[in-house]
Image 1 (cartoon, protein in one colour):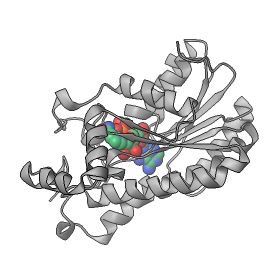
Image 2: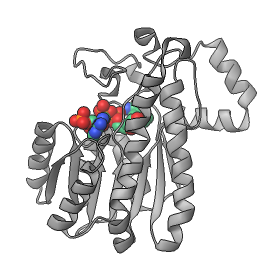
Image 3: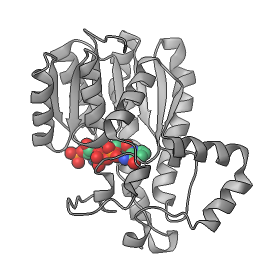
Image 4: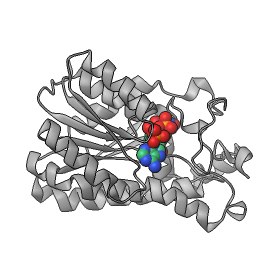
Length: 273
Ligand SMILES: NC(=O)c1ccc[n+]([C@@H]2O[C@H](COP(=O)([O-])OP(=O)(O)OC[C@H]3O[C@@H](n4cnc5c(N)ncnc54)[C@H](OP(=O)(O)O)[C@@H]3O)[C@@H](O)[C@H]2O)c1
């Protein structure tokens, strides 16, 4: 039986689809109120209606994590309307893929602006509220924060960077009563593979990752919310993700050979070279 979270508040970036939306649903199912942020306002409103119908409070704030000030305004509105923030999930992100020699600096900057500076903006914007509640800051990393494969350098770099941030903040914020959880999922059902290197969505795009290996979004969200609520240091989610992280750490030569032998490459490399 999951611990009840009544009277507490979860603040989620990138709550309009995929993992962020599913985590918001799971926090609400356990009794928490939620703050939903992203750029697609209609999606957030639809999710908020669904959550309010279950008797929980849901505040929608349209916000772009690449814009200075948006997250500060969102955090202020959250505290104003709901009184507190207990959990932050810095989840908003997308993937820039492709071989290094076909990419340019702008690709790496665009990737970092959302996946790294977006997480930093969330941390700066919510730290005071988290210190007041002795809450938890969750960083959405990835298995690609532990490994890197051909064609993945922009995305893998961004996820390695936020993994380092999570580790440093965990040490720094512990004495202030704020815990930090790193979330490192493998392949999860979501809309991420419909988004191109410029951040544009194509709803017609087929997911290039085979269905059998992708974890259901609600299953992944349940595991990640549990990890955050229990103040775990890190949750590596999916069996294939755990195997990849284990091999890359304890058998790096074998892991490299597997990448070479099986031609493992970023899922969108072919589309984006
Ligand atoms: N799915 C996977 O296999 C997988 C695996 C490992 C890690 N992850 C990570 O999980 C996180 C969520 O991705 P997802 O898989 O759930 O993909 P998704 O369905 O595409 O969701 C991405 C979310 O991020 C938001 N977002 C993107 N750019 C934003 C910006 N500039 N400002 C505000 N919000 C922004 C999107 O909202 P709007 O477009 O409405 O703004 C959307 O809500 C990402 O950090 C991703 O790297 C995913």
